[in-house]
Image (cartoon, rainbow, N blue to C red; front, top):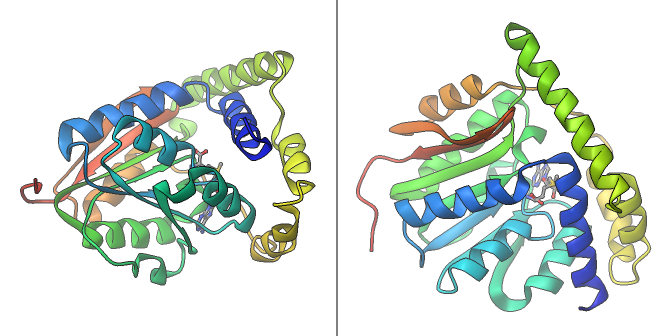
Length: 250
Ligand SMILES: C[S@@+](CC[C@H](N)C(=O)[O-])C[C@H]1O[C@@H](n2cnc3c(N)ncnc32)[C@H](O)[C@@H]1O
């Protein structure tokens, strides 16, 4: 394994420390893709990072075409270098409406642990653009933490305790935390030249307010989707699915 592929493996271990059911979440998304739009279509990965989900899509559906989008120059480089020619990797800011200007029909868009960075107004605009860009019958799958609010205080506490337990176990087993992974990535000779651009782009970034799964489902329906619902859940970690009106193509 080369050192960039090893960094992606370490990214996966690091992310799994924060997302307890990450692999089950990926598998649920791939299963639903297969059951809805089929295997060999064009699928867009929004906030792809180093390409974790894109890679799993291509491994499971070798005939699929993947467009992987992110705004982090370091993670985009890692995705390009390790996905090779298997995916089209695009540099775009999902809060800028221009992100959707790539060509071609799209059967599905997917995202994991990424869209929580968008404010609620930005999220609704993104969902609306996703709806516009999908072919009839196309689907969106968004996997992320949708936090319980004060109405579900007990569940919120259980989910937070579970997060703590998962992180402690993962770090004890040797996974890096976010800071350690970024320290390693930032000093890699292929990635280091992209660190200043990353810092510039994300300098003004502030965390968006947390949103519940109910908000996500209402936002999807408000954005034009004919159907929407959760297809997978573990505590506050969900995959929500939404489908555009119409028949999916071949
Ligand atoms: C925690 S990482 C998850 C990456 C990958 N989806 C995964 O599951 O491993 C969040 C990703 O969202 C991307 N992201 C956040 N805000 C973005 C934006 N406005 N436009 C494009 N990508 C964004 C970040 O650059 C980062 O790659």
